[in-house]
Length: 278
Image (cartoon, rainbow, N blue to C red):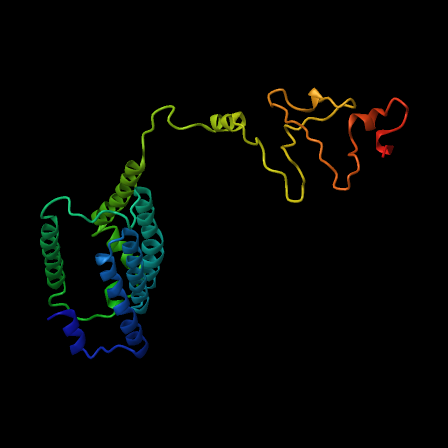
């Protein structure tokens, strides 16, 4: 007699709230599991698995196992699935991956092994639940023992090996992702920050940012020298490694002579300023 049959014989029934939660989250968990299996994108498969794990966490809480529910949501959904996504992002799996069968017959072999594994798991569950009577949570935990203490006792005694093997598998997955994502580069193939900065200043483009909006400028101020009173360029006004730009005299739209030339600064021979000439 199975556990379900024993529960039926003892007259155990689901409450209204528990039944509503089951019929809402049960199909959702099943849809997430199917989406994980049949999704071609590895990232989408991981997200579908998150949906299933969240549903299972709620089921644990409904079954009066809050610690298992919290672990299911925080550890498995929040930590382990993030680790899976981190591994997928490092490896670089996306929707453009090739789905062409590179090894002939691998799909048939995968189906055979999958069916065999499912049968093995089903047989193990059936054997483990055979001739079991339905018991309450208090009886399973040993009376006054809390849910956390009962789980810790089983986890670190009977299932210690499985717990450590699972931890080793997670660490191996992270290390494998780092090995696959690591790329050996030959020296000199990638420019350093110093080389990039030097190449930027050696080009003929502007070595610094453009003038801000509303600023009228024909050239970069770094390469625009100052003018001496006689109209020549002031060599101390620009850096020696920068070729000075030619300073143009802008014509005035009013037709009046532009101020700032050498005549305006020095005046004419007859003493009249260039700015007063018509």
